[in-house]
Length: 220
Image 1 (cartoon, rainbow, N blue to C red):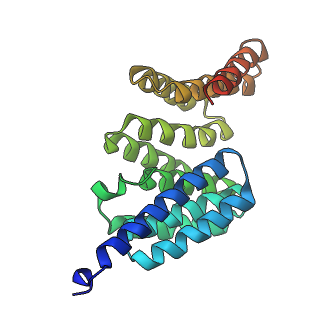
Image 2: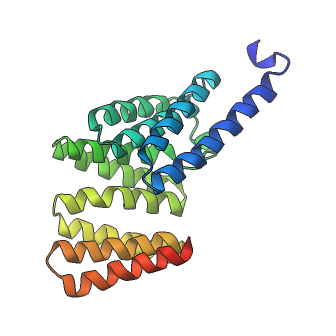
């Protein structure tokens, strides 16, 4: 069989290592909002995933392509990549998916929520936001849940859903504090400040945003 061919397993490991390296580059590019680099790294990731023909690797690559296009403002293109990624993820292994640097199922769902929001499909956006949080809760990884909350909270804030935003920010604070996830806790502080600012409370909101910025800078 193909899997038993000489040299096949080392080659697969080389491809897996390459995809993992590209994942790290992609995370850095996204964090620094280097859109052109993110698009390039995502395209390279797709080429590697096409060689492995592994559903989880394909889902992973589609996550990167979707996120890069979302950053670039190509929301319909991003949505199509997220939809493709969800199809691959459905036939992949939940256990193996966790080996990647990020949990692609939650990111795919959160990406759908954000893309649909920008396309004006608000009810569908809220559905996917809920699915993303539920998937984060099921993952068993506190950091994954926190990241899913961080990614979908802008949806609730954009829709001025203050009550749901407040509840999810409180959840993010509780989980990040309980597991000493301090960078994510700092992001929660920033979201709390943004929540206050959007409701016209600059007196309390601005200091929280400043504190979050200072904390994140010190943690780099």
